[in-house]
Amino acid sequence: MGALLSFTTVYCIKKNSATTYSMTGAVNKVPTTLLGAVAFRQYPSFLASIGIVVSIIGGAGYAFFKAREDHQEKRHELETVSVAVTSKIPYTTLRDRSDSTSRDKPR
Image (cartoon, rainbow, N blue to C red):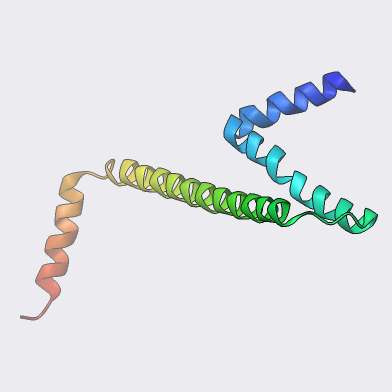
């Protein structure tokens, strides 16, 4: 069981990043803490409640910015592929297309 846990940990870090793995470990403590507080009627102090709120905000902020970064990377990849595909069209073909469309327009 320990070997499987170690393998999944390494696989998770390989597919994501060490920061994402660390954030997942920290943020998953919040629901456990809240469930324990309700189940055992041991409610957190004011300072502990602030810590829980900061953890939730930090996890949500990290998820938001990580998703935004991933979206920008994918968009950049698509733009790169688009440029690579269009760069294989001969320039004369593109010029002929633009000339023919400009001639067809009434002045």
